[in-house]
Amino acid sequence: MPLPQTEMPGRLQALFSERGIRMTQQRRAILQVMETATKHLDAAHLLRKAKRLDPSVDRSTVYRTLQLLKRHGLIDELDLMHIHGEGHYYERKLNRDHIHMACLRCGKIMEFVSDIFDKLKGQVEKDCRFRIVVSRLEIGGYCASCSK
Amino acid sequence: MPLPQTEMPGRLQALFSERGIRMTQQRRAILQVMETATKHLDAAHLLRKAKRLDPSVDRSTVYRTLQLLKRHGLIDELDLMHIHGEGHYYERKLNRDHIHMACLRCGKIMEFVSDIFDKLKGQVEKDCRFRIVVSRLEIGGYCASCSK
DNA sequence: TTCGAGATGCGACTGATTTGCAACTGAATC
DNA sequence: GATTCAGTTGCAAATCAGTCGCATCTCGAA
Image 1 (cartoon, chains in turn red, yellow, brown, green):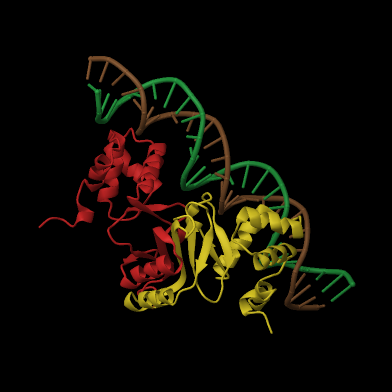
Image 2: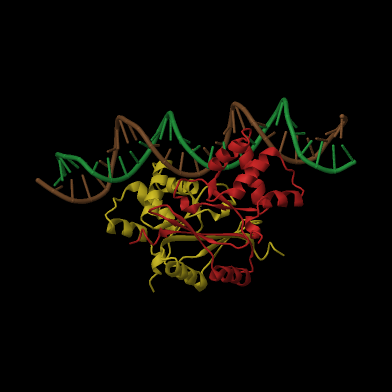
């Protein structure tokens, strides 16, 4: 059984060559980290992990690659309600948008997929005649165990 | 006919004394700017406008007051998809949450109130047993005139 | 292999926000 | 109205995330 497309290793690399984007040693390291990440990474974490694969990776290359990925719509940028500072977090764009919930007490991040969210976006596109490119719904509050 | 509660002048000030928060000359100026603002303000704009009412207002007081307002849930913090830099924008919290749409071409910001959005939040609270405190839905894309 | 557009590392820079600290002030109490 | 002090302020310096200029390097097409 094949992995779902969103977890196919090397998918980002494949998309790069598909689009004629040059692949470099440093980008390979950064993409590999993005693809195998199990949680949301900020630029500093991404740098640290990428350096382990290729010590030559520089901070500015990480930022430049993130911009590239953003421009190509391959990653989403998140704030996660700024519960851990002012920076940004990144995740591979999956085939379906999801909501991020951040617990203000324990800091846990939860994700949630909802048909109603899709419907809401449809309503915005129709009622406001607005062509959606990116959307970000972040919710801060208390998770089940923290609100007891 | 009274103004709707969300536009009542002095409402933030009233909420301050209600909660036993000390009122100062500088805070009065900052709150007044927040209350009479017709568009989304970032910290620098807020400072400039507050200085016109009270030239002694300092940048750090603006930031400290914004934190205070955030902690008390009296304002919402927005990114507006970072179409004009990395800073934040602020607006008084109204009685009903709304969606922000930012046009990636002309930079226009639109707001939209939707029952579906309320329903979606209801679903999150119920299905995820998550107690929502703040929520932020920002959408980037192209407005009607720019997507022609 | 050659070669040039595009990518990189480095270090300096910017812009947004925070902090430490001494001086000040609102408002509760007398 | 004067006193008092916890909370607030302005200032300057620090921090933090992200960007930029530039000389050098390197993919990958020919």
